[in-house]
Amino acid sequence: MTSQRLLQPPEEDAPNTAADASFNCKVVSSAEWLAYFENNKKNKLPIVWPQYLDIPFSVRVPIIKSLQRFQVGETGDGTHLRQYARTLNDSLYEQCIDLFIKEENGHAQILARVIELMDGYLITWHWSDYAFVTMRHLLGLKTEIFIILTAEIVGKSFYKACADRLPEPCLRAIFSDIVLDEMAHLKFHWSFMRKEMSPCPRFARWLIYYFWSAVFLGISGVFVVDHREALRALGRTPRAFLHECFSQFRQDARPALHLE
Ligand SMILES: [Fe+2]
Ligand SMILES: [Fe+2]
Image (cartoon, rainbow, N blue to C red; front, side, top):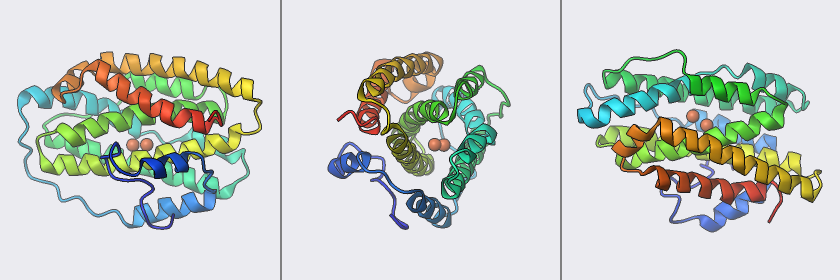
């Protein structure tokens, strides 16, 4: 894995489908993930921020509203996740989790700057973040990772819509880079689930899959209602967005649970 990106850039529908599929069936070691996170951090190029963003008011307002919520979500210090990770007695995985949280916090800083450049303000609390954090802490590490994966899929799809449709080239580049990070996060957590779920009996994995699918649909359904104005501004219908999210979920969840 070394310094290379784990996946292709945002046009993920086009190339690399085979590589993607084979990746889903592979458990990547903590050492390899650590090398990935360290290299990704080292290879990040500084963002050249513009003085002004030329975005119509009709797009700017709903996008700010959505980005404010994402910014809160990316800000967490990951205390529980770090505590859970410690129980695995895998110091390399703990270091990966640390770098993963720092990468998410880096996204929070970028989003904060984007919001500021669009003349928006930052919020410190939102009910959706509170709900996510509460669900993540219900049980142990696996539950937390399941809920994080749900958030990662929805987040990646939203950032991709920003990368595809925002009128400013600078923002499209920024969101494309975030999408690449999020795609790697997805693979990181799927890889973990694949390793952890392998000892479970097959019927239990199917039960988890159906239960998780229902939770996923519920959460993404609430998301499209809550972010409908931004999705509309980005040219995505709620139905198309849900379809995109659930396709990603189905593509990755079954291999992660050893169901294909
Ligand atoms: Fe993120
Ligand atoms: Fe992420």
